[in-house]
Length: 155
Image (cartoon, rainbow, N blue to C red):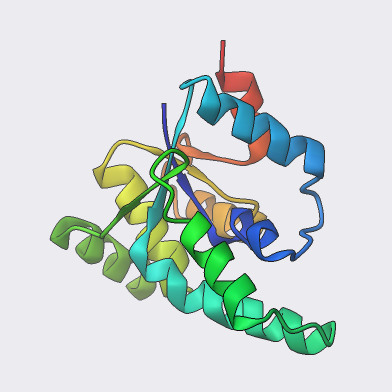
């Protein structure tokens, strides 16, 4: 099962806690990856959002990772055992543009959703507002899940 992950699920790699995402949840996801029940994919464009969130959290909590610690954590995301990095396709970009025209301003979310559709993947996100936006526009959300719903999909 292919899972495209939203930035939220990468924040704990940098020591950033996410409300509603526990250590147990992260361990379950890791176990599913190690048992080859799921493959996690990341969209290359999310670095734009991820860098901003890491920086903001470091300011809020007055915690700065050393360059070597930060590099270690960045490199861990490139471990092919856990993550495969992909780029959006031209068709994904077109769909993302259409979502923007429909009124959704978060271009990263739009690209994530569009890529999950064109590559036939699940999009794992905790962004309920985005899901409501899609539903309000009668756009399918069958492939939009969170980590709790992921557990229900795995036999």
